[in-house]
Image (cartoon, rainbow, N blue to C red; front, side, top):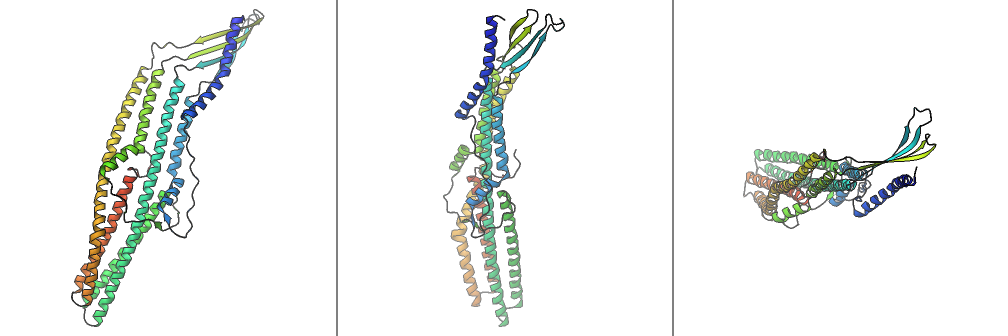
Length: 441
């Protein structure tokens, strides 16, 4: 083997020895550039608070974020995307093998050697593949952020449902007490022969009806609590008093501000934007595909014919004259257009989803304000005055019964409007993201 051949073979082995250092530097620089995005580990499972006292909605959110199985599921997808980023940037492994020629010459002309072969990726294809993978990481992280927001929305919605159910129990207990007091009053008047048995029967029916309604409200409370514990990811979470204020004391939302906030901060929009960038990077990768890779092979062998050692060097590359990845490029261009239209469709879909929810919010807020400031105080005063008039004998029992029923129905409607208000408000504040326990699409 002459000196020129020796230099080529030595250079080949130097290239192979240099490849791991290049890979390590590439991964290090990619970490610095943000392609390997750091992401926090799921926090440890939080324990329920001590039985003393209640639990706030913020504390419930923290418990749900730490225990919700969907969070761990989405985090696993982020880790999978990070693994793909590592894998797609790795160069092919070098190959080593045995070479034997002239094997039938009874040892006179046989050639035995060791070959080393390496494929060299050209056109920046490894770098471009990692560009695509980095966009997939970003998309997975935005999907995780969307799921976390879904969890928060579901927790807040369920917590306010518990508060509403609790207020309904309190209201129905009050109505039972009012009905029982009216029954006792009727019985006293009946004993004094100032009331009829019909009035007593009507009063008894009102008590029984109020007790049935109270039982239903207790069942509803149990149901809302079970739904809350499911969202928390802890079905056996012990019952606690949820600390929160039902009567809204926050500012009024406007349609323009709500829509602008939704379209600018929604994780769904961010995920769609990441998909557009992924498709753009995939197009660049498809256009680099026709750049041919180079395969270098070096052989060092013992040549019995000359009684010495020689070598061989072979360099090959495909000629892209038939297959220039025309179909792949066309597909990537199409996917980029699809992703851009999908993002536009999502923006319109968010507006479409927000519109009916904002209508319910507007209606509920108007109802809450009217009930709180005018209707409920009027019903309370009407019941008070009617009861006094009935005790004085100025009105009959039917008037008292009508006032009691009006008070009951008005307060029940007030509580329902509070529940509707918070359901709509939590959806708007939660960027229209809910349903954290539903399977991912």
